[in-house]
Length: 127
Image: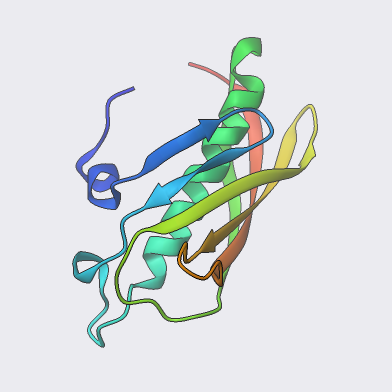
């Protein structure tokens, strides 16, 4: 898969990619700030969608399908200014036609939750 400029800006690093767990980290610094000096909530939403979709794809790729997001709900829990953030995604439900994944974004230095979210994905035929 080729990586878009948008994905490069996030500096995503995957440590684990499997059908039941996706773990890694994202960049979160002044490049990702909203006008008031905090990381923009869109960064968290994007990370949640990316990690959930990666795991959902891993779960269905061998069957010739892919997973596409149909719903993304993100809760913003703490402000963050700079420093990489740890991201972990795990499935809550994996069915024949849909999957539901939860994702947590934490500060590595104190393990405090910065944001969390859920993504519902539809399993569809590739191509």
